[in-house]
Image (cartoon, rainbow, N blue to C red; front, side, top):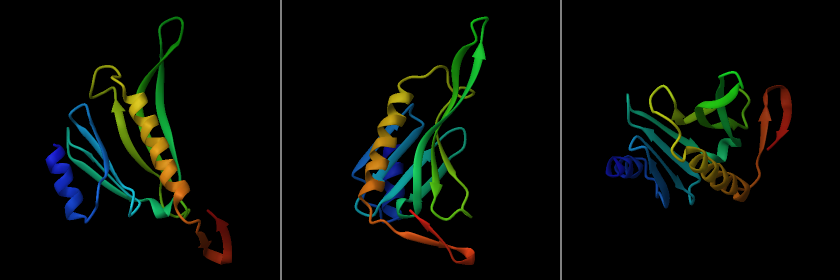
Length: 142
């Protein structure tokens, strides 16, 4: 899987310096020089996403929970890393880190997702600040 991921990164001319594989299903990697992120989920069907961090306004952890039992204990059903863009016309992107429908129980995903959120935020903070000019001459500061 990792070889497949690195080959895909090379085909996109990315220089992945940091990457992580978890659950033998997900791989994420960061090309910090070009500020690009590559993500692949292999099963049940392969999903690949490449994100240009120059266009990203914000990264955050998003989760879906459900309550169980009489005590209404909260159980995490899904974890995503969500990206919102400077251009409000672009839809948010969600990278899945955990899905209870496909795997049994969390196995470190909350730590993995927080680590990547922090790393990506640091990359975003290091990028030159740009100004996006929205339609109708509204200026939105990044």
